[in-house]
Length: 201
Image 1: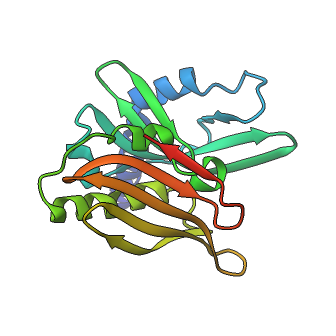
Image 2: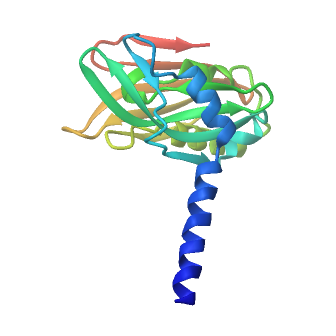
């Protein structure tokens, strides 16, 4: 009986701890991603889903004002309603968030990449680690149907391919990052079929 009471107390304490976790982040998401806006393409934080995970990443040392989270959000686009993981950057100093939409929805994020344009890395090895950490973040919410491959780090550019993997495997986008003396200058994302390119600089 005593052991059973201890288990119940532990369960209650654990549930209380979970409910109190990420309180400030939840408050900001409810304000910034509300469910009462009738906008097509909107992203909504629905508290009953409550899937939030703090991410540890090397990218944090470059964006020290932000904490990184994987959050399950709901997207309303026309008749389509999808819930999926998204990357959320939380700035605790001013209680704001930056939503990074999944690759399958918005392509390579201009918001995230733009934070590193003109940033100078110290060594090629540091740049290499950054690129792989960046790829991991960009795949949040898209790992079920997207994958980065064929990464090549040269003197003046970094190239890699974004594969679509849920159907017949194919290259969905070809990515090129321009570098000058370890400084990021631009990112090009090119559709290999239409040759259409999105440039971030």
